[in-house]
Image 1 (cartoon, helix red, strand yellow):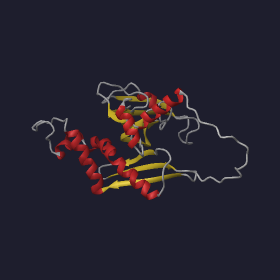
Image 2 (cartoon, helix red, strand yellow; image 1 turned 45 degrees about the vertical axis):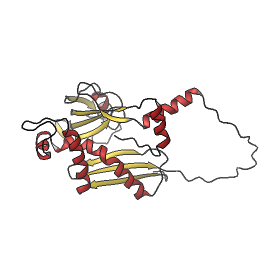
Image 3 (cartoon, rainbow, N blue to C red; image 1 turned 60 degrees about the vertical axis):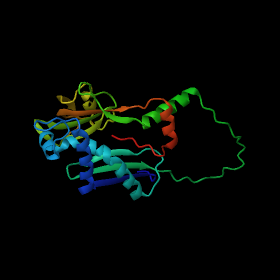
Image 4 (cartoon, rainbow, N blue to C red; image 1 turned 60 degrees about the horizontal axis):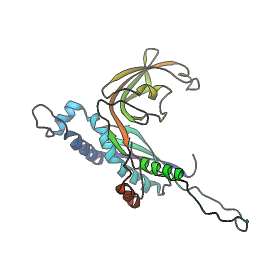
Length: 260
């Protein structure tokens, strides 16, 4: 790993993680109607009994990311030069573990740079370059929103899934996950897995018939594998409109962090 790239693992647990789960419950409970209670008035224990604690994880992660990122920067004692890569390594009702990959300024050693006879040139930006930069900024400031239940998984969406793999009719060791947030197009899984989720809807279950790459680990290389996959939620990135508020936000935003 390069000297200017640091991986920082941050674990939020106990009361701190419980606080974010409570926030997630309050947000999701607003739109829930449970028999015997008015809309949004069901107790947390009743909500969890009906929907499961896992239904709160992704919302709680959204609430927790800023705090976890701040702790990562404090622990690493660095200033990032680009937005970090974020992975959710583990999540359960007691704790969540994030892995931040932070890129800092590389160490630069200057050689002889004076009296080189180079004339200073005035930088000029084309309309295309300006448009591309604006789109990049819009992408960085995008809001993560939940797709409607009728909408389908598409490229660059984040699908919250359960999955279980089988090889030779037996459950694949380490090939199981629950409420796992998977960005479509991230190539986090073997070829065909993410592509196989495109077009699925929330609540839909599907079996993917795939094959491990030839250069995979020795025991699995080239073997056929089945994955049972259930999609729970689909999240997508909503770009901000190009209006006066957008440009005002640019003036006051110091650090832009993309959330999953």
